[in-house]
Length: 246
Image (cartoon, rainbow, N blue to C red; front, side, top):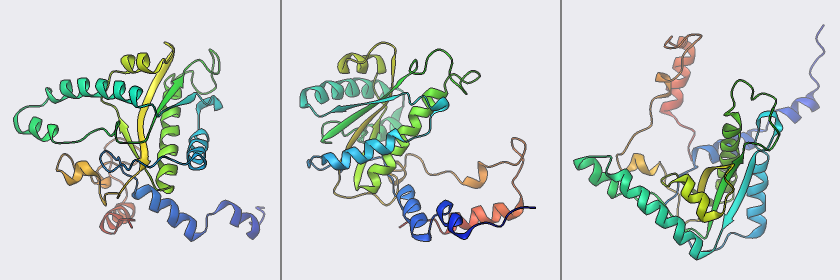
């Protein structure tokens, strides 16, 4: 016979309404920031909390493969910015006509504007040659490092900090600029700092680049392509009509 749930224990494992509210508020108001950075430095205690949150991300086999390289030197940021400009020009050439013009009007990096840049990396050898949970999916350490990026991003938003992820640069050239060892993999180059405002909706959606896809089109039951049950579908569609945004 199952034991009754201890109310005190139940309170420990279920967040209060205000806690859930705060979590969802952070999730739905996270933005990829590129152009609203202020020059104010990030206080050390705030940065420590954000990094500590990132370090508490889940990781396969508890290998914790991440490192965080903090970039504040203007000369180093300028070198990274040059890498971005070269890659961005090459990326622009991949588009044609009006789409290329639209691309060139987007500001896709705040490397020089943000007071702090953080490069998150993955040490794929940290836990040795055999890692629990990685035998069949060796890329799980990379995914784990991305979880650290997400933790960092959400903690930063809760602290009022903006974060922008710059992926338009050659990772091997970035490793040379930052002195990253050959065996280490750059995962994310992040621009971090206080901002003058957060956009109500994602910037790329605002500028017509892409819109958020309907969740109901992305969820299946049991088999790929099999429609979800009616009750869940209705709940998903209702949520879309009244998003949890603030």
